[in-house]
Length: 114
Length: 116
Image (tube, rainbow over all chains, first blue to last red; front, side, top):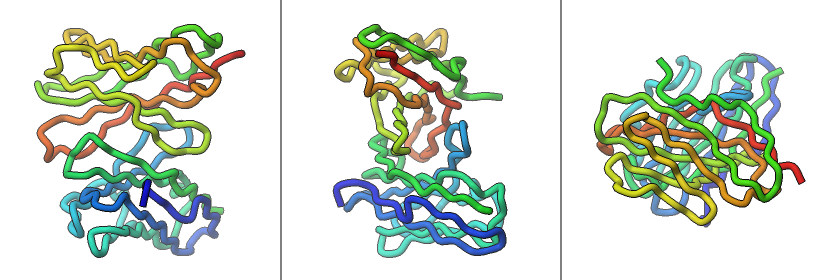
């Protein structure tokens, strides 16, 4: 696609439920990143994919968080048993190559856990 | 320790004036890249400008320029002739090279409001 697409744009969920956030990167971008942005804060790195593999998952805050990428394209970030502290904007970015500075971000998914 | 520091949580600037947003960074790596992003209320992160640590000249992109002072470890963003549409959050970020260091390290941001 022309840009990085994220869905849903907004998600309100009850505490304890599971949620899935989707990222569709720019076609041909091999690198994909997930970041989390809490209110009034900068971005917190979560996970990075190069193709379908995730060489670094160290930013995932707990084992309730997982992510996968299939076909070197779409990625899904899953949060199980959501907690109120998971409320944030989840941003996805892609770039043409590993570490390439041409990062393009999506508009994010605003997650609210009530 | 903070790797990226943006000391101005908020700024008000009159339309058409120039504005400087401060960013200082901390790294021991001689090879790094510095980025500025704009985040309007829509939430999307928009890439503005990039400066490599070995670049001889300050980066410029239209109305945006980067005042890169390597010895001081500062990379301030200068917006000339500000416009109402410049109102947004602005983030400074750093990536330590080589390419295997893929993370961007972010500052806390500066909220810029342009007054008509």
